[in-house]
Amino acid sequence: MRFYVLQHGLQDYHSHGFGEALGWRRAFQRRGLEFELYIHRDATPPVISQSGGVPVFPYEPMAEIARDPVSDDLHGNLFFGAAFGAACSALNDKISAEDVVIIPHATARELYGVLGWVRTLPKHRRPQVVFIFFHPNFRWEMSDDGKQVNGDFSFYRFCANQLAEIMPDNQVIYCADNDLLRETIARILNQSCSHCPMTIDYFAADDVPGDPGEPAWTPVHIGIVGDFRAEKGRSLVIDTIRNFSAARPGREFFVQTQNAEQAQALERSLQAHGAKSVHIFGGQLSHGGYVKRLNSIEILLLPYHRSRYIMRTSGVFAEAAAHGIVTVAPGGTWMAEQLADGWGAGVLFDTFSVDAVVDALIRASDEYASLKKAAGARSEAWRRTQSTSALLDHILSRLGLSAPIPSGPE
Image 1 (cartoon, helix red, strand yellow):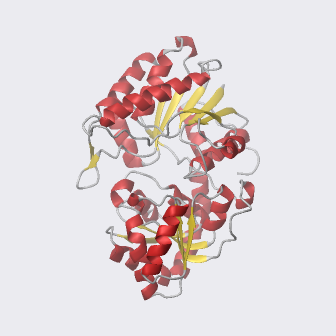
Image 2 (cartoon, rainbow, N blue to C red; image 1 turned 120 degrees about the vertical axis):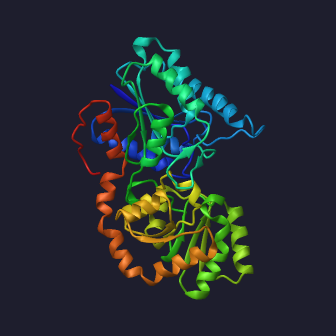
Image 3 (tube, rainbow, N blue to C red; image 1 turned 90 degrees about the vertical axis):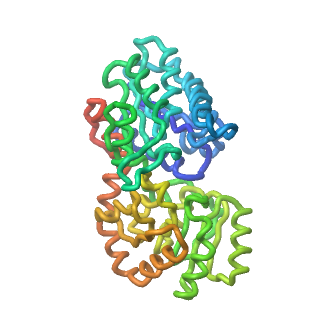
């Protein structure tokens, strides 16, 4: 038996993909299981060498087609799904019915792609397939009470029905990493779907690749890391920094942007508004550099739009919980549920506005000592329950296999 993980969006150090790849490798190696990783065909040489991935996939999971809003979703499912399936043919010479293919970032496209690919394989060589859903289709709509998801689910149901017809019972496994998404996927596919741990791992800075050219990080009171996008509160950042700094002067900020151009534009805007004590980094950090920066932040600000995180997990929040870092996050989200359940510690804001975020930041800053103590209380338990290692054990259980006893450090 061999496991194939299709991390088809992994190209560079951007986002969480590289850390996920390292986590998969560590989890399989500790259990003595054979494993191969397949990644994006445009992956950078350092990512290929450090992850051990085979570059074959032409598109990332979030690629979009924008030609006709009426048909774009279907067009994308067919086009990107077919491309994904064609790239899976890289496994054809070695795949067997005893093997397991894991797709950590599954959408309808990957369902369709696997359907097309599996149909090209002889029945006696079709592998077991595990689809892991980690975010909803953003065209779906949430009911007012936040408990029901509505939308066009026909393509999902079609692919699941077709897979059920050509694959034996228990040969296709569906998982989702939060409960509302799990309920939704089970309903729309009309298939069993389990609530699984997140695809994430937590490394010491010295255990992952670093970049000697990165700066020595100055400790800061408040930090914003990761993608600097609209749904992650980009529009709120300047006024939030300015207003908080007026209320609590001298408490330093760090902001990571996606590139140097964004960093320069942000710096000009902050200077124009008289904001000081702000450290800005434009571009991608090495994984080691990211861990060092994360651990030099006292309060991690997640100024995200609520609608995108009602049934979507947050890797940055998970890292904060694992490292015992205080958070400020939107209410009514998966992050809020974790805080309510005693995972991590932080303060919530109720509306996507500068005033609400600043009020939450002031409270977190003023109560930092007690929040910091609470944030670290369950960090080790979080690392055990929300990790790729725990996810692999979940998958093995769903496949009816006994998980080998891990060896070596976690």
